[in-house]
Length: 171
Image (cartoon, rainbow, N blue to C red; front, side, top):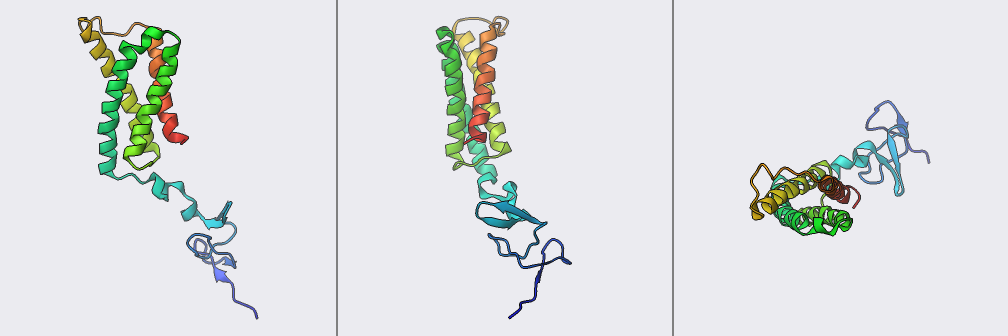
């Protein structure tokens, strides 16, 4: 009993007996992507179409608001208290960035992608900036004194933002 070969969805002239393991459309070996669960079409293999990377505008806006609130509070604590601990402020920066990103992940239902990385990184940076100005104003310093001069502060900011972005990227 011989069956006639199907035609590939992408390249109509290519005969095939292969089907996508997810959506069951006919694909040829040239158009397929190898996965641990079998051969799939390029459309199913694209991470952009996965539901994990689709963040609605409402949940993204909520993630910005909640992450920014947590980042401002954490940034103020890290600047006013954490920098006094010397080397351990760097560990505090890593925890700070991870906490900001974890809040963003939980608010959106563990969604990921470039938009979420931007939200976490920008919120972490803005939280440290606002925290610095809050700490400077609580000491009675004017805005002229509020310009950060400590290299440790810049290192803390870089580590905090990098930790926030990597927490989203490598969940």
